Image (cartoon, rainbow, N blue to C red; front, side, top):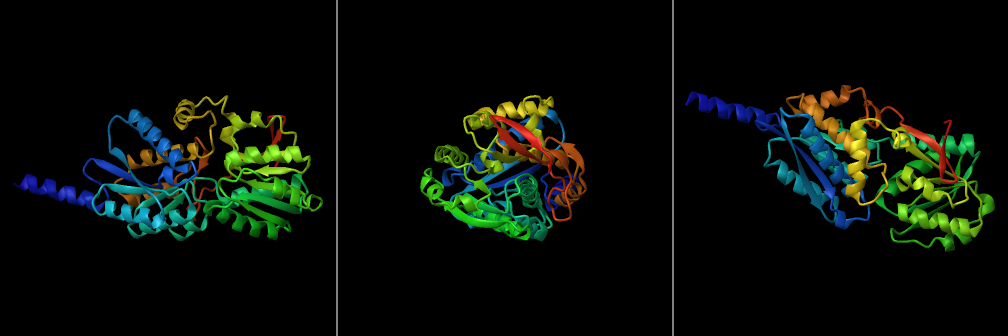
Length: 372
């Protein structure tokens, strides 16, 4: 009877720390893929599944880690409501992951911080979320780093002081552009025109024809991958020669060769790791790349999958070493190692310290790394 009592007591003590007796659960909150044109829900699910499978292969003993997906349609409030209901029933939850956009990620951060659970985001670009909520961490390059690199391109390489924005009208991009415009203004770079397009728009010829190109030094393109393909073709047919910056999320290394017929001056940013995709020797990276490309149903290795995969692998590794979400938070705060995405260490705002991006010039389907 005493042994039984102690066993039950131990279970409750573990539950109070956020664990069950032999497992830890990561709750992943995401808008359903059927409810968005963004591929981020698929990227996160595929990356998480591959990370969990490979983590279980590399760790034969220790804490059993499981993923609990909570998907929703509609407003982000629906996602966090479902998550809270689940959290009330499962004491083994140690961390939350999500969401796919900044507004809904902020809601997840609020829940995680109220419940003292570690929260990781791979897609939110609103850096202030992670400054405001100390239990939340951003596992991606920061918006500040992206903007610094872009401004370096405009000022140091293009001598550009007047730009036009072509962008998709969605919450994530709108958040990025609001911050970008403030940074451009501080750098004395004016936005001549800010042209928004719906997610399904593929014909940009009217806007191209109506833009006062003599007053433009460069074009900043924040469109989806398919929209960018159409935009580049239409710009080339227009005969307008102006440098183009293409958002990182719209272009992959494998897509570089597809730009060969586009005889225009083009630039982008890519993480350093992506520039060695074909020569990378790390077996974990090679294995993930091959599995991910097949699972995504295409041959492009996008810039979102590796961040999520590497972040999940880090969570799995640290969970094996800790006894509570508080300890997990401490380990993340003090972490400093080189990983697949580059050097990983967090600043006091919960964002990654190191700038892993390279400035890239696209010429004839080939790329050249520029000085920042």
